Amino acid sequence: MRGSNESLDRAALHQLQTDRLAETVKRAYETVPFYREQLEDAGVEPDDIESLEDITTLPMTTKEDFRDQYPDGLFAVDDEELTRIHASSGTTGKPKIVSYTDDDLDIWSRTMARSLAAAGVEPGDTVQNAYGYGLFTGGLGFHQGAEELGTTVVPTSSGGTQRQIELAQDLESDVLACTPSYALYFAETAEEMGLNPRDLPISVIAYGAETCTEPMREEIEEQLNATGINNYGLSEIIGPGVAAECHEAQDGLHIWEDHFYPEVVDPRTGDPVEEGEEGELILTTLTKEAMPVLRYRTGDLTTLTYDECECGRTMVRMKNITGRADDLLIVRGVNLYPSEIEHVVLEIDGVAPYYRIDLAKEGSLDVMELTIETTEESNRNEDELRNVILTRLQNVLSFTPDDLELVDQGSIARTEVGKVQRVYDHRK
Ligand code: DLL
Image (cartoon, rainbow, N blue to C red; front, side, top):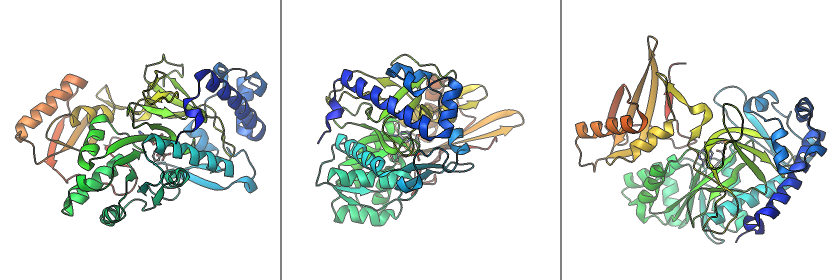
């Protein structure tokens, strides 16, 4: 099941995007005072948008704008036209409120159905949806998409893992939709129940909502004997269903470009980077009614490729998110992303996919403690493993932690609900 736009000839897609961009700018200008002011300040009028390249004349929208406009300053329709509200909880301050009309929910269902179909999910499959239901867009986003595709949804939400595993067995769930950290927790819990997680009926894991490096994907696939498919999205733009990997290639996430227009810029200057270079992903909604968003600074770091994909879809692919522009850890002057550390460490035999990074200050000096779980099967002793880890970190990242703690598998706190926290910065 594939929608026609997914393999649209790129020239036709370009035209569709141009028309939709012009409509979106017009809608934002005419109905959202915030955007009108921003556009006026930038000296842009809706009629100026004649080609896609004109998008670079538009001002960017930031997370702070969402917070400042709380709760409804970015809404483009009257209350009577709204059908749903979601919110994304920040660690500080007010949540970002997002809204949907009937048509928005319909488009969201369709982009999510596309994402699941790209994962190899088929009508008639049973989808166990372990994303949290509620204000978080993960639960309801996957739910609607799975229904739209014609699957049977089991809306377990997150948590209650033992019961979820029993349900997966009894209902023969084909697909598990959850965060990557939850997928690992799921496998570990099955093992604790005396089961072999590889024997569970699940054949596809539609993971997302947090970073998942390739070694972590391999671990998930190995432990659950299933294909792991990455899903990307964010509340401000719609929720999940912005981009998804195809099971044919598992090599980058197709951005559903007929609804969300991507750019990649240098996070420091805001200037576009060359194709194939990493930078911050900027997204513009092309069809949203209740809350059009112009050039949103996602903070997520990625790379775009327009190379042909073996699946036949023509839509651009983004690589796995490598981190967030604001995740950057500066430790004694060295720039590090937690995902880089994860990538190096998880490739080492004997290391379990659980780690945490603690940063503190000793006087004026930054100190980093890295805690890593080891697997029981490792044939290296602790000293050997320690040496391998430190040498690899030094060789690849030119960095070693001040303290490396190796702990038994199961020692680091697991998350049963929500996204995992790996970095604890006690310096602030
Ligand atoms: O996490 C939407 C979602 C739900 C996506 C379920 C996929 C699956 P928010 O809570 O608004 O929305 O968080 C959005 O999460 O800006 C990224 O930093 C991060 N994120 C989402 N998907 C991925 C991914 C949902 N596949 C923020 N890889 C985004 C890495 C991701 N980071």
